[in-house]
Amino acid sequence: MAASKTKKGKMAWWQLSLLGCGCTIGTGFFLGFSLAIQKAGPAVIILFLLAALATYFVYEALGKMAAKYPEKGSFRTYAKKAFGKWAGFSNGWMYCTSEILIMGSQLTALSIFSRFWFPNVPLWIFSLFFSIAGLAVLFTGMKGFERMENLFGIIKTAAIVMFIVIAIVMLTMGDKQALTQEAWSQNIDQFFSEGAKGLWLAFLFAFYAYGGIEVMGLLAIDLKHPKQAPLAGSVMIIALTIIYVCSIALALSLLQWDEFNIKQSPFITALSPYDIPFVPHLFTAILIIAGFSTMVAALYAVMTIVITLAEDKDAPPFIAKKGRWNIPIPAFVFTSISLLLSVVVAFLLPKKIFEYITTAAGIMLLYNWIFILVTYFKLMKVSKWSIVKVCVGIGFILIAISGTLGEETSRYGWYVSMAFLLIISIATWIRYFIYERDTG
Image 1 (cartoon, rainbow, N blue to C red):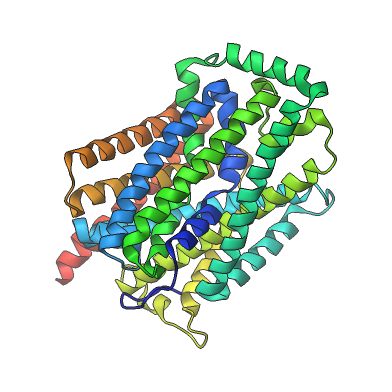
Image 2 (tube, rainbow, N blue to C red):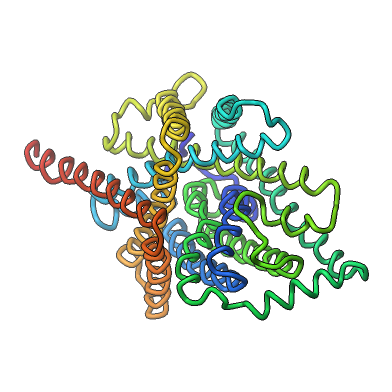
């Protein structure tokens, strides 16, 4: 499944942009918006713009490295080039750990969404079904993965655009204007009602909406012209930010901010007072597609990274061995077992502890983004303006991560992320500063 250095890619830049939409638009946006608005109020729209700016800087750095070094492993390979083997080891396992943990939360969310239509079916049956379906997509190889993510990307983007169109229609209908004017008036009056602390606490959830852009770095090796990698990501992030911000602004035009809740998609909540029969069913289906799509992207990322780790002997080398169908069967089995473990953890751990772990996984993903920016600074020749962008990107990410210290659930999630980081650091120390020294 992982491409070789010498393989000629066939993907156009716009196809990578579309794949990026498929890998990025997910429950992080559809539900993350509700979490963010509860803490920040209507000013949440500012956070999404700032998170978009930082995300743009992160992908710009990753895209430029991909253009210069079109190699498999992407950010893990670049970290190794910049800082040595220890960086490739630690970066690869940190990212794999975060994605494996995130898969459990995605499957849990998918199961809960599916209960909208089948309330009496046990959650574990849905989780098993989506796990098998996700692994089936992965088993089809790169072509199957690309086709599915392209389709999902179109569906998810179309769903947000559809909400924008429906919201505009609702705003312009005469008999609905009283409702919308009341909501808009309150949201303007209470724009900064939750203050600076609310913005600080909510910033992390705005970043979650853009999680997945790093997968584009892994896919960039399949580009026909690798130098177009920065263009593909730039177009995708700009387009995504426009539809995110427009949909958030319109949702806030339809409903007072304090009526949104974390148990429901913000789009379903925003349109619920207007009694449109098909809306709950449509957006529930979109939520399921979004969650399944990002889960498949996580599976692809884990499998790709673990193959490069195995090829560098940072994981058992046999994992990278290809089988009869030109797919590394041991890597596929590793990914399957990881998915199973994430499901078991999701269902067996107490709810609060599982929330801590999923929060930690999201934070670890942002640690990876910081690693990308630092690697770019080390590996490439950067201008003064690029240095400013790297510093701004790292600064925004650190502010978002520090916001987890402001409340209990997020704070314990940060503690768990630091515990994982410590474990990986110890493993790195043993692997490269004790074992390598003794055997070398």
